[in-house]
Image (cartoon, rainbow, N blue to C red; front, side):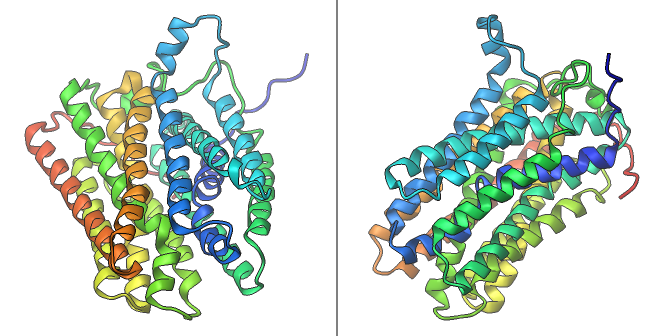
Length: 420
């Protein structure tokens, strides 16, 4: 009989989570953004078609999140289905992401909506189960604040894909080459984390017995409070997605011919990394909802900067301000879920992710509609960004209202981070 495999250390878990989210989010979801100008230049899509391709991906993300939310119910109703633990779902999602990204390199435009939809499903599965499993494992190792390292993953993927795309634009490569490169990269990174995401003695995602529940008071929130939290979180999905989908196109419209255009997306990614790591240094003695409200305001300011200063400085500052709170919002919201629903964290994370997905789905079609009825691309994009900024401010006000309506009683301090 083979010797038991050693348990991975906290850094191995955090690094695996980082790479997992870099693959699923940075490549599976957001590689489309830096490649979109190349696809437009190749003439394989136009802006309305691109909007629907983006929405197909976000709709898939919603479906994947709902599958995670109702997974316990599905297994109860269909007991003949195999019981699959979190690490296995992560593996399945990562392999699917690599295959579906490679599929986008094929000149089969009719299949692209289906491929982007399936990639969205895969990214949601990877996000929810990576978050749940890695946060649980880090809590078992008394290193919960290292969860912020995990959420640097999307930023790393975004920055890397953006820099790759910038080089391909300079070399005048077709978009199909970009999809091929990103698919191969996703496959290679999946191989790196494969051994870490392995089932070990029934350790699943956010089970009621995991130590995550011990990090805070064992509170159970009512339905209204959870719906408010999920709704406010969903507004973040709508608020950021317009910029996250169309940033390179908006910059090209405002600054035609600029050599800096292709660097705004990597700047966004660097902001995401910075914000995720900064989130690990914020004391946890206060209320997460204050932090969430502040993050929404920062993102709103980032969008506003690009509206009022559509130049190099405005887009650079705006990209950075939009990126810094991006996964910090997720980190704080998932920690809030673990406080409110410690015994059902995974399914509740799925609910919030689903609401986020609904917000994302609504963004691109709204842009397409406004562009259709605007006198110019610039006018349509400006109005879209104004709506996004106002939505984020509304979300911030919702969190502040929840602080008053549902005060935190007896919060236990989170253990301090070690090793970061």
